[in-house]
Amino acid sequence: MTTPRPPRRSRATSVVFGLLIAAAIAATGTPAGAAPSPTPTPSAPAANTNAGGGVEPAPPGSIRWSVQPSSAQGPDSRKEFSYRDVKPGTAIHDYVAVTNFSSAPVTFQIYGTDALNGNAGALQLQPADEKPKDVGAWVSILKTSVTLKPNERAIEPITLTVPATATPGDHTGGIVASIGVEENTANGPVKVDRRLGVPLYLRVAGPLNPGITIESVSASYHGTANPFGGGSTDVTLTVHNTGNVRLNLNPEVAVHGLYWLKVASANPATMPNLLPGSTVQISAHLDGVYPLGPMTADVRVVPSQITALGLPKAPNEPQAVESDAFLWATPWPLLLLVLLLVGGFFAFRWVRRMRRGRQDQVVAEAVAKARQETVEQLKKKAMAAKAGGGGTGASG
Image (cartoon, one colour):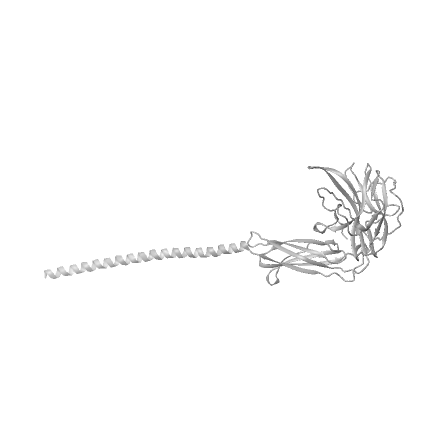
């Protein structure tokens, strides 16, 4: 299991969701009819080091508290509420402990809620203003609001009633202790909800059918100015958990050219804890992709079952799924270089031909001039010879 991460802070809600995962413990008990009870002054544990949930870290003088799985006597060694093979219609009894480590009284709201896959698939609690519809709605707490003095602890009985119509498989949520505080912002005071929660994992008995599908794949190519270098490709795929158990996803991405020539490949980080019915986007960035014209981005996702917390595997293993997307990568810098080289070659030939034509014209003009001068000289000599011959005959 991977520790679910806190949701992002919105303008009006700051959420701290510490979910620490450990070995499976399916604990049930009979709730006592006790209200919050003071405890001996507890030593304030360091942030996120308590045995059973989260401790809200804060500067000295600020509000600091913890929420933990508990027995009727106090927090136990569990780090989550985990129940498996629970039949529909079953009621589970347990306890949650909330401790105020602050130096002033604090009022806490305690409630159950659902989990969801947020941005990049991170496991988080649904927003506080949304009403739970799954396992969070099945949780009832004797006192949903408690005010604790400094270093006082409340141990509250909780009951998780699984509906008779509950679907088999995994249901994920959390038990939350929250406070409302006022924070100053640039736009004035804002009421902020700060939450700390313990994960709640419930598996309802029945047939388990793990499976995923790839709903879509998109790819885009980004070129480079280097005519002999490779660009990059961004690939995004959307994966949907179509089964009824939580799954880890191991994606593989590759870009192929003509004749299935592999141009580049990548193995994005494992996406843990995709909840049943949830959808997540996985992105991969591949460098060194040489543009080969028509190419395909091929994706493969290998799901694996989660066996932490003592969860048994489904009898049928989830199958790997594949898909692809077409993309066109034109090597513009190389084409421009080739065009310049070809243009330069023909320009060189044209200049050379022009120069050769001019040289031939000069030679031809010189030859013609020499020929004309030779003819004229021959004519002069002939006329002179003819004139000389006529004078000799007259004297005789």
